[in-house]
Image 1 (cartoon, rainbow, N blue to C red):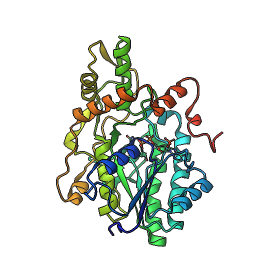
Image 2 (image 1 turned 180 degrees about the vertical axis):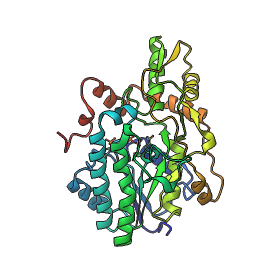
Image 3 (image 1 turned 135 degrees about the horizontal axis):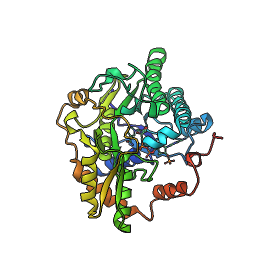
Image 4 (image 1 turned 90 degrees about the horizontal axis):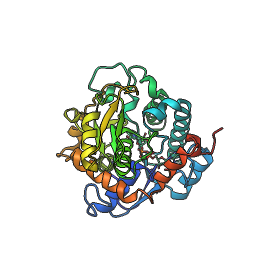
Length: 350
Ligand SMILES: NC(=O)c1ccc[n+]([C@@H]2O[C@H](COP(=O)([O-])OP(=O)(O)OC[C@H]3O[C@@H](n4cnc5c(N)ncnc54)[C@H](OP(=O)(O)O)[C@@H]3O)[C@@H](O)[C@H]2O)c1
């Protein structure tokens, strides 16, 4: 079912984060009426946790009542890198379970005609045959390091099927691989690998200190630039109607080692000092390649992914331009001064 152009309100939860920012950018910068650009009759609403804490059922209902969305891209989540996931397993489980339940229930109650919720390749079983594909989400326990996040996210797929079977809802999900880009969380300890490395490398350059990278540098990952991912979400919203999830990723042949990524970051930052790995820190899963075959077969035409070095250069430039004035980096710095994950979204926590 295509989006009706007469009157569509597309609510993007998590609209202030990395992926939400990218969707805002793409929808506003692609040509009007194009495959990924804004279309006549569409209203896009991007909300963050200041608009409504979606862990709270009343606040969730209030925001749906206010905007009366016809479509929802559901990105809002407690998100973090390996170390944050290892430290706050219960918070990742509870917050994300509450958020997802409230959003899907409101979408049903308010008659939303389509919801795309965001999973992650982190939700897949630890012990599974590679490459990952859409049929393998529930085939075994996730990696120990992030089971709180993984189980909460997996349940979205179950809920989508149950909403479909019981109420005929058109709810589906997307499974992105590791995302990076402008407006990421650049916290030095709590963020994903690329933003943490970029921030650390910029600091090493500024302070003329060694650039030390946690882990061995050997694990392999697929990375997707947030602006590419944003286009794929817009495609999925407009052109895909099935409860089955779709992996949104670059191809398996685009897997790169953390060392390769770090080399590219060092080049993008222009860092010329000492740089080494610290193998005493955890590496996480060694590799978890995901297949994008389903995506490519559905897209129907060739999709150009931004080359990694170009995307990294643009992300570094964005961080340099926003370093002192960006709220997300200020939030990051506040957390370093003794506050915890709890302080980011205080409602409903002890
Ligand atoms: N980043 C990745 O590598 C990656 C990979 C795979 C999947 N994903 C998924 O992609 C989605 C977007 O991730 P992201 O990287 O854009 O995350 P992000 O930058 O951390 O943004 C998270 C968003 O969720 C909102 N949010 C968090 N808690 C909330 C709450 N209690 N109530 C309402 N809103 C809340 C945040 O609002 P405020 O900022 O306004 O507080 C923000 O807009 C998530 O579902 C994530 O699981 C991310």
